[in-house]
Length: 79
Image (cartoon, rainbow, N blue to C red):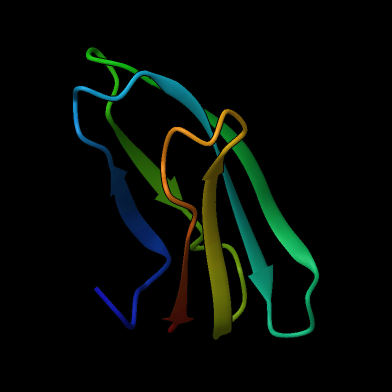
């Protein structure tokens, strides 16, 4: 949901098997999270907890190094 308390789930199609990078930036462009996710049939949904971050606007970006998924960026508001 947007806005969020800082906790959300990132889910992928179970047929995907790749390594995905999740990066979160604050409004000044400072990276506040850099996390590698190994997506496969057994692990296609990941909990993200940013509740310790201050309130504000953030940008989450997902991409795979092997380009097997389309890069995605989403702005969200942390309350």
